[in-house]
Length: 512
Image (cartoon, rainbow, N blue to C red; front, top):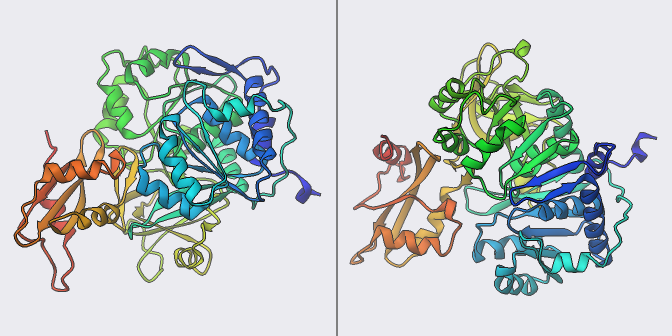
C-alpha cells in the first residue's frame, strides 16, 4: 500500500505545519505577519486558480518575480496543484527569457508588472496561453484572479518520481540545461537536512536569500517549513537589518558575500548572536579569512556545505561536534544517503588526498536534463553516478574539498557565471575578433569575471563601452568587472587559448 501514499512534496510540508495555524509563519521586513493558516489558504486559492485553467498534465509554471511571500505561495501552490515550478532569476533579460520560455514551453508565465509588456510578447509568441503579473506589494493580476477562488483545495496526488521543478543551469557551451527535480528528490534532501542540521522546536530562520535558486527556494524554505519554523523574511539582503534581527532568530543561511557584508557591521558581536544556533554558508567558496574572522567576532563556526541545482545538497560539515569539527576550506562529509567518489578522467577512483572529478549518487540526484536525453546519458556513469563537473579531493578523515570547476565556471556572489555564454555575446560585438573570460579572486564576491579581447583589424575597442553594451543584454551578475583589450591571446601548440595564463596575469587585480 505504500505506493498509494501521496508523495507530493507539498503534502509533507503541509503535514509539518504546527497545530496552531494562527501562530506566525512569516514576519516580513515591511511589518506584515502571515499565519500558517494564511499560507494554507493562499496556496489553496492559487492552486485552484491554476487548476481552473485546464492546463495539461505536467504543465510548467515559469515565474520571474521579485521576492515576496506571495511568490512563495505560488511555488507551493504549483506543487499543491501537481504542476512543475520553473523559477527564473529576476536579473535575466530578453534574450535569456526568450530561450527559457522557448525551451520549457510553459503553460503559464508569471512576471513583474513592470516587465509585462516584453515578457508577455515573448510568451504569447512561444505559444504560452496565460501570462499573469505578481508584484512584491501584494498586487498583480495573479492575486486578483486567485481572490475569486475557493480557499479549500485537495492536494494533487503525485508519486516520488513525478517532476516538481525545473532549474536552469547553464552549460559551458552557453546553452542552458533544465535540471528536472522530482518530489522525491526534494523531499528526501529536506528530510535528511532536518535531521543532520539539528532543526528543533522553536527554531526561527532569517530568510535573506533570493528564491529563484536552490539555496533560498529549497534549502532554506523547505528547512523552515518541514520544521514548522517561523521565518523572518527579508525581501532584499540588508546587513544592518539582519544584525538587528539576529537576537530573535536561531538559524541563518547565506552565500559568502553576505557574511563579508555582515562582518562590516559594527553591531555584529557575540551578544547579537547570543540566541543563534547555526550559521550555514554555501553556493560559493568561503574564504578562510572570513571563516576565521566570523568565529572570532561571533563565537560561532560557520557550517559550509556543498550542493548544486541538479542535486540539491550533497555534503555538509558536521553540525554535531561528536561527528567531527567544522573545517574551514572544506565542505564536510557526504550527507546520509549520498554516495560521493573522486575519479580520474578514465573513471577510476583516485587515492585518498588525490584530486579528481566529483561523482555522486543518491535519492536527491535529479532525473535528468529537460529534453536533452543525450546530455543526460553523457553526464551519468554506467553505474548511475552523476558527474558534477566539480574537481575536488577527499582527505584521510573523509572531508571533501572542492578545488575548482572542470569547466572554468566562475561563481560570483553565489551565482554561477559561465564564461562561454558571455564570450558568445562579446564575440558577436562589432570590432571584436575574439574574447576570453576568466574568473579572478575578489574579496567581496569570492570571484569575478575579467574579459580579455582582441580587436578585428582596423577596429578600435573601448572596454568600458563594451561592458555597457553587455549590460543591456545580460543579467548584471554575469557582467565582467573589467575588460582589457590585448594584441593577442596566449595559446598552446594546439591553438587553444590558455586561460590559466590569463587568470595568473589578472589574479592580483583585487588584492588589497
